[in-house]
Length: 259
Length: 281
Image 1 (cartoon, chains in turn orange, blue):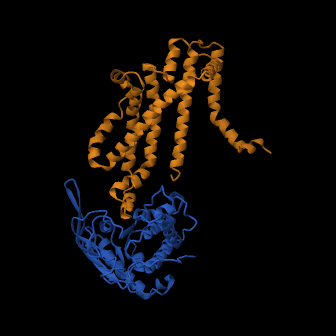
Image 2 (cartoon, one colour):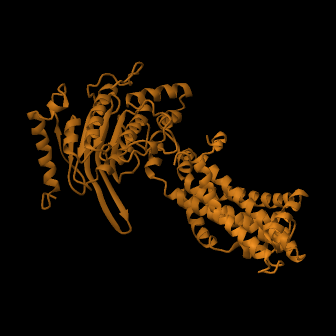
Image 3 (cartoon, chains in turn purple, blue):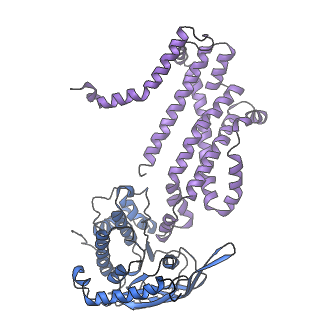
């Protein structure tokens, strides 16, 4: 009998899992090999084992978690606010003519603006604390959320709206009862697009303005010639991003079980 | 098939005698609908008048693009007419209302709601309590032979089942008038026939007024008490044909009877004049 079965794993699952990550393992081994044999100077690329050791030290001392929490908090606060604003604006721009007139051109122009270019402006206006970072995350994440919410709302089948109205749903309740649930898949796609933007904006702002966070930790590594710390920070931000993305996918699966 | 309808309530309207004074009586007078796009105006419906007495099953046939669906959506209150009036029981309609229930060709079920959730929707909007809501919904789910599928989502159902859910959803909130827009058009023949028979049973039992749009002459003649034939663009009433068939006989005998064949031919001929290029219009 296969022992893996006792923990609810099929042998096929194990093989599938191994297949899905073997390319990553190969790349990491290549990294270790190249660095160990000094094919690249260790200042530029320290061996993976050194990076992992530093990662472990920083984690054990609590430093890494502290910085990761700062980054996580800023990115999530901004993303949540952006979702709130973006969904309201997007849905209303699609359903309300006056809101559409106002927001459609704004969204078209605002969407492609490289939000990173605003980092100095926000520092100029609001300083280097949490507020400008969160605000810039809001600005960066608002556009994809709003544009996806608007498009998804526009595409809601009019027959669904009519069905609800014939069954007695008032105009006021229509959005909550039918339009938003029907547009939910598109709305959530917008949030998924916004997530990496939230992380990028937070990370870059921390690199430029300091104030703690994984971006700050990384740039500190560069400034103090601690290249292992640079890569350890990078691994940390990758873990944060990966976890959040998986979490969001899980949430999507739960919310959209009907699709 | 086991249809458990033990505690079925009778709708408020008494035994159907097609009395024009009781519930579910539709009057359409000099209806006109123009669509405007830019400078162009298209007349979809013109000079259309008809009275549908309470409890009648009216079939509407017409060549494609004659405005059959537009007519139905006007009566539903989804669209607004350019001129003319539509009245239910003497009161002009003002937008959609729970006295009328539409059954769409593409079902228009709420995909995020289960079968039960779809059927209870109209009752939720009416403010019916949870227990009663579920009991009423269950009755119509059973009536449509959907028991066992209460917790399924629409995506898990076949087309025929979706249409039965749509019918149950509309019947559950008890509109007096059923407006059906080619509801069986996307289904294959055997399924369509079984749903047609199902619909006749329901119509007899619940005593609804039905306006049934179809492009299928046989379907119209088989189901309806009266068939309205529409002209080609712009759509207007060409004529109506009373269907007098002995409904006590089973389908296979009915469709072979002389009356059925003759009536079907009358309707078909009348419709054919509209579909043949170089016809009257």
